Image (cartoon, rainbow, N blue to C red; front, side, top):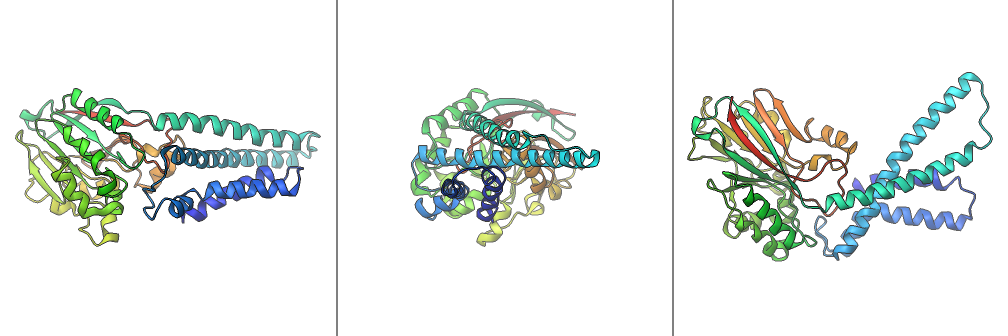
Length: 377
């Protein structure tokens, strides 16, 4: 589906900006082939990077360069689409007022198309820089009605969507671990998408997470990319080698009286693994207890709102780009970034700690390490 949709973007850019140009047809054909090749980035990754669609074994610089070209295409498509809509509006207005088209109209349309290409190139270069930069610690305070007195002031560090893969730099991962430890949280939680790739290829980098330290431990749940990368192998590795205790449709009671629960991910159904079960995760938790749920996919909040006080999620990357976050929001139950009230439950959706190498662009939606302080309401 993504491959066909990307081809549509390339065709739109070609027929709007290139086809009307008065240039040799062979140049038009060459440009068409280049745009088509850029649009088929993911197919190229699959053909030349091995069958791990989300984790191709290709050089870091090549991965980033092709991802940048693909982002330029998407950005150019978006700006061209807006300009076409505006031009249609102007055309209808002129027709209504019975005005003639200006003599230099076509020239200015052509110039505008390529000015938009220049803007797209600049914005995506900036987005690539932001996307591959280290996250910032973002402090938030959340008030919970049923929070035990002993837990008032508890600090939770939230990591999500690390997407550790072939191009991830170990030194960046070590710096993220150090930033979390320096924040001195009482509890560290990781809400999925740790990795893209097999244990053999990425295990050494993921093992860096074992240096995370917190009094109440490091707890986690799987994301959809763990299923793509070898679910059972990674669940074993994360517990034994990375010291992340996985909460798979179950809960634990922390020493301060707060219940911490976690679910699997909806992607489990495609791989014949245990699907998310919010009710099972909430077993043994009473209505008057304070309970926090870890769930990679924020849409699970619609089921969890009757069982939990607070849910922590990732998955959306905050929408990655301003404007695109509106589309991502629609695909995730109306949740994309920040704090939401869902029934009697609060939901925090993080922008993610790092970036997916398949689209390493951020613009207006920076990566983050939320440090959430819980207070009694």
